Image (cartoon, rainbow, N blue to C red; front, side, top):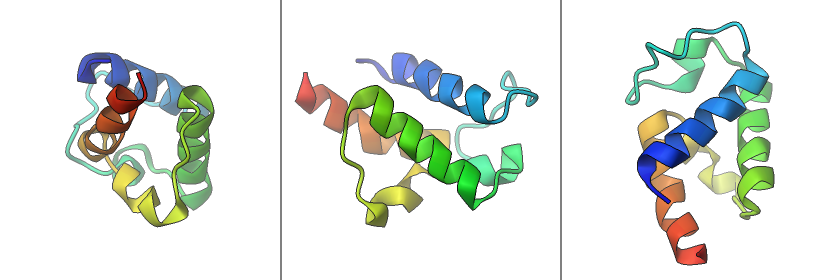
Length: 84
């Protein structure tokens, strides 16, 4: 999997949670919570969506690593490529 493919999947999950947001201007290095005005429950939905989509265990201690697009890709990409 490439980072571009993973990015598109993450945006798909974000769109399910916050469908009215503008994703064309999403900054990869800024927190989802800041950009999309998400609360902690929204962020939990993001984590659960990623777990469900990729069938990966994501320990609660790693949730903060899924804060922005860059950090989420950095965290997931090695796990997904290892899984393949």
